[in-house]
Image (cartoon, rainbow, N blue to C red; front, side):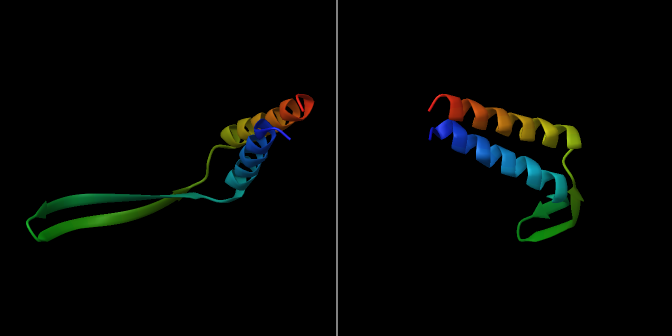
Length: 71
């Protein structure tokens, strides 16, 4: 089997997982002076757009099909 097939499998799995698991993002605001720092750190979790997930799934399937045909 070609490498394109396995890359397609990975992209397909990442696309499916991105539908269910949120992506965490950390943001820090404040200032730092020498050894002293004052600030606020926030954590926000957002899911990837379903459109992006669908494109990844379709791309993974097409890469798998192309990798199969060339072998």
